[in-house]
Length: 346
Image (cartoon, rainbow, N blue to C red; front, side):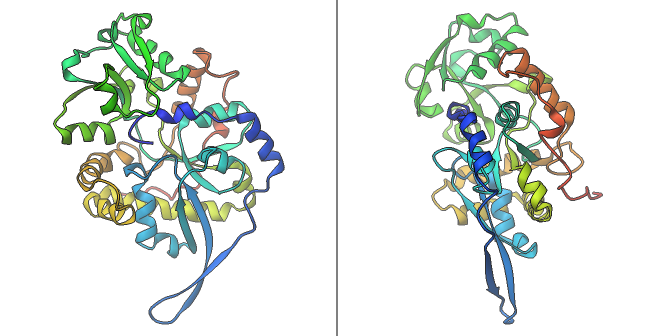
């Protein structure tokens, strides 16, 4: 979900997920696929599914690269990239229906506090690239400028809490913002129908605005609070998957890391791979988005995917203070770097 922040609107029925966790085995019986190379050599690959959080986009490029470049095959895996079901990616991973998926730090945090044992394996993007965006003619240059304006909401309590946090830094009053639920409308439709600003990810909607010749003012939430510089998206599994088959987790993450490292070094070629896999995507948008996002996958981290305890604790503490969590998070169990390959010297 790169175009907007509607993933939170699809909040999961965590109690139901918890029951599923108790009653469902960690995935179905392992299946395999036999493949034969050009030399006639046959190999057996373990079938693995990874579920996306939203429609395919440049957040997911590393997965498609690892698939197309044979990195998964080299790791002994036959990986299928699938769309989320009705219950969402987190439900599918938490229940063991699939071993891996794309999620967000905010939803993993909420799940963990409610007893759902999702575990983040890697940060897809090192820093939060989301923020509040407005067409430049709306005059929203600072958080205080949001006063008296209409916000295109999707209906999550986190929206007002984040808005209040950044407006407080600028002496703004969040009660003076008019929130309007925009349903399934995208950013461009919303701002044409009386909405002044919305919460987006710049790598997709921001880049699309550039291509459309519709400049916008972007207030990145991370610029107003270190606690809001959280990981979104992340790659997740569940505790049972880690305990029952840690080698699968290690193999999958090693190959996935190669995919994102390739995308970092070769944005144009990686965009072509994504477009070949998902030909319905807009080529100009994918190319431009990939160029913007590739250097931000790893950014200032020692390796792609690296996660910090301070980031997990900081955002969870913020959520708890905002009464978005029922209890504090044990951050040490919410994520792990143990299945990432060792950092290489550049």
